[in-house]
Length: 118
Ligand code: 5GP
Ligand code: ZN
Image 1 (cartoon, protein in one colour):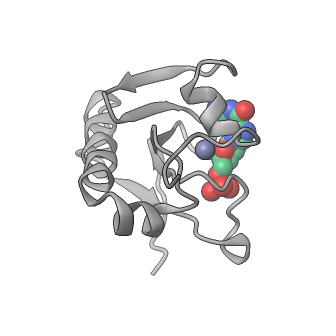
Image 2 (cartoon, helix red, strand yellow):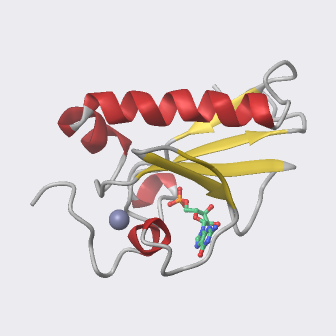
């Protein structure tokens, strides 16, 4: 069924607490934890607890939860005190964009000069 945990999904295992992670925020629908290979002083992943392969698929199926992910990304930025200096929210979508874990996730990056991308 759509949204159900996938046995071979690393982030579903983190949601189930079968794989440890440094969790910084948790809500009924979302989990936020530090990236294992940080690309900036703050690098937190915000994920929905339900499994969808990417952010767009999540938004199409569960728009309220997609909203929760975005709101939590903003809360992470405030907790980490990068909301005033600026931060970036990234949803890599598809292998050509560098996506390696096919469970929707927002990267929240900040704490250094991130340069203008687009
Ligand atoms: P993607 O490349 O799919 O957009 O992002 C996946 C992210 O997950 C990468 O930034 C990678 O460093 C992170 N990651 C991969 N395995 C683990 C893990 O076991 N724990 C944590 N906390 N992050 C992970
Ligand atoms: Zn998953």
